[in-house]
Image (cartoon, rainbow, N blue to C red; front, side, top):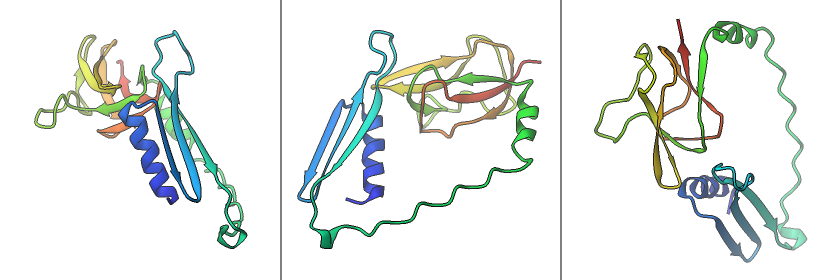
Length: 166
């Protein structure tokens, strides 16, 4: 099993809502568990990943690779978006799950860039553990940017939309 297959398996487990998956082959064993890190607080389970290599003959061991050099920080490009976004309000995800911009594949999008929103307007749907949760606006404003692609996995407190309240 290569790294891409493992990453695809992790994504599948995170989306599916199962609590534990264990795969064992002759040269390795992988266990993927989703544990609730904040029990009793209504927070969705967050996946915990664990891979356990089994003993391999020295002839089959992969050669060690040198660590990749650290990327140099971007000089002046980072401060400009921060200053540009300081008047905008971020609408963040209240849970982990899958982000959807429309109620079903054959329906129109809830909101697009440039739309004016008011409290109670549905902005998106987040699917978590086979439940579809409508995320409603809590402020008046204009959608400036949509920060997440449709049908993408999202994390708790991840920014979803930028809204200009003026």
